[in-house]
Image (cartoon, rainbow, N blue to C red; front, side, top):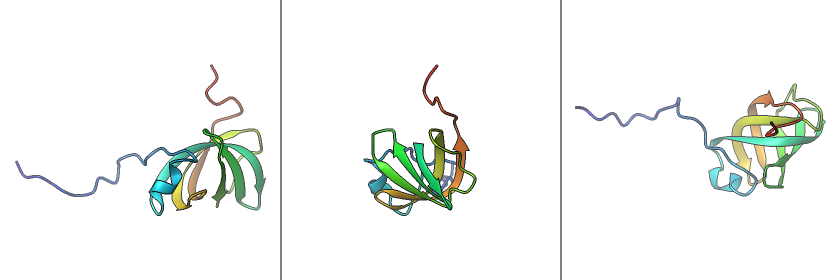
Length: 95
């Protein structure tokens, strides 16, 4: 059988937190942050492991204390250029 070495663009982006974000610079990643501050499309969010991340281009993101999932490009060790944001509400992870 022929082996296809094409990149699978449907594969999910790696899930990162504040500590592991820096290992994926320039790549598309997913993360969940708790919104702390949102002004003019620049959002400050707290990662699941307690790091403060800057999310650029997070237009339409909810107000604190909502949790959001961000998919975007890791453009520094503590910032992501968002492509999409999903509101998870105020009680992420609680049953």
